[in-house]
Amino acid sequence: MAIALDKGIFSGLDTGRIIEQLMAIRNRPLERLDHQRSFYEVKISSYGSISATLSALDASMASLKRGAILPIGATSSDESVFTAAATASAVEATYSIKVNHTAARQSIHSAGFAAEQDAVADLTTHPTQVLRIKVGSNPHADITIDSTNNTLAGVRDAINGAGAGVRATVINDGADLRLILSAEETGAANKIVVQVDENNDEIFAQAGETDTAGLSRLAFDATYDAAGNVIGGITNMTQSAPARDASLDIEGLTVTRPSNTIDDLIAGVTINLLSDSAGKTLTLTVAKDKAQAVSNIDSFVAAYNSAIGLMRELSVPVAGEGKVLTGSSTVRAIMADLSAAITASHAGESPVNLGLSFDRVGVLSFSASPFKAALRDNPEGVIDTFDAMARSFKERLDMHMDTMIPARENGLNNSIEAITGKIDRMEMRLETVEMSYRQRFMFLEQILGQLQVQSDFLAQQVPVMQMGRGGRGW
Image (cartoon, rainbow, N blue to C red; front, side, top):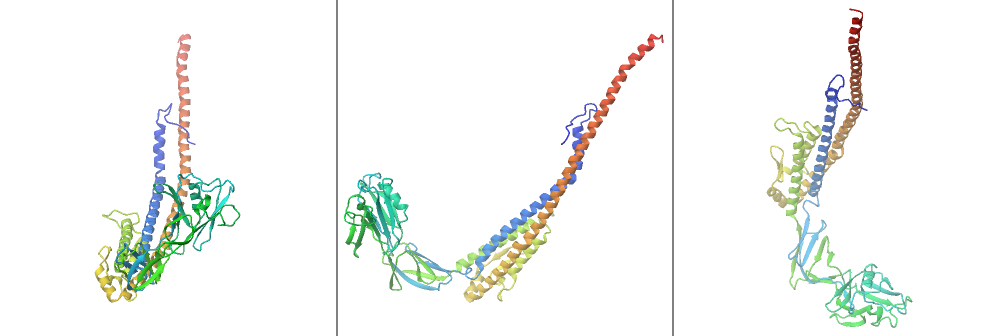
């Protein structure tokens, strides 16, 4: 603990200032160590930034591999009617398509209620009743109706919480409130069936459980003809939208599917139906996406220049001013290795002959013209070259990101740890030195104080001695 001492009482010295100046000299080696530690920390941060930009380069480079650089795409001649997407397994072709109608989900609605809090079931005789909902071939869901949920809103919420395969809502049609049940899945097979067990005997749709009173007013199991007319079943609720399969003509062949997302019609192609085509025949084109190939290379070039630009900014001196990583063999190796991966021959061809080129300071650029020409004349050769380059790039990036940079960071961390130990030990020694300075100055003040007391005493004795001499007749 430092001893407080600001100004000498007897000496008049500004001891606090003197000690501060002495300690400033003593602290210079400590300041140099602290500066060195901070410099190493900045280096670690810089290597971290390089790793991040190399990771971004790695991600962009993946788009140059086989199956990615020249993806196959699917396009619709009218995307308001349908859209399409293709995978690598798709085959280039053109198809004529007419969408007759899209798939639809069945919706049914109840008779009118005056308010959301109106009771649905009559619980006077049987205080617990059951509503069973089944959609298509899916398992049924049984929903208990009792005094806790026996309102229009309560039944709605109970249905939605039961996982019954329908979505329940309450709609105000302007005159009444109606319970709407809509199937979650489209397709003619996903027909809604609602059964009621009002006496809670686990037997549904008995006599009295299909009428229009109480909970049975929600019973529904109707069948319809092609024109949408009821031909049988229970119709206590009313169908407002029929369950329907999608229908389309492809190359003159009529096909149906239960969903508007169709992925089993053309191998490797997914078609999303949005609306009917109003009798028009449209075109689905499956072809290699050359524009995407150019975009992939442009993205790679931008990521490469960003990574190299950062490394140059951190390591290449400007106007004699050093940078934080000036002289770093790690950075030099990364930059040289990555440029070599581009200029090297891959699968018998160098990417620099396919549109890639460097300027005098190492900035990479891309010209689409020679790339497109090569793609037209020898698409497989172009894909092979960029795929091989991407794989070579991946190996080099992995080595730098997983081995070289971490090794450099570990070395710097070890140096920081060693410096921190030196700083801690030096701070302890300096604290002892400061304590010694303060003790010495205190000791000096004590001596001066004693001398002052003696001086005062002697000064007091002089008059006494003079008086003594006078009394003896001196």
